[in-house]
Length: 101
Image (cartoon, rainbow, N blue to C red; front, side, top):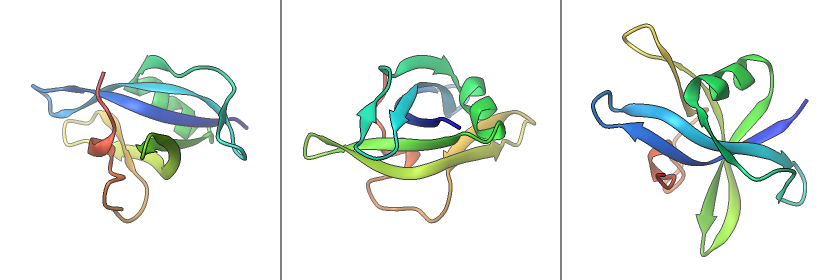
């Protein structure tokens, strides 16, 4: 099973939610990328989570990548699916704290 990481997000301002993310596979220990993160539709992140992949957010802290919380599927009011942080909110490590592209 792969471990994937999300480094940046794109928000649709009209919908007010994440529509794309930069995601790539990482080595769980050592914080190394197996492949550079690439832009994907949020539906691809949702598919990975539903398939049992571990998907985490990666934040830059003092210029260094720091593993953040795991992501989970979010059921939106309009019946669509999105992504959100899994677990309690950590200051500075929310989905909205990720850089935008």
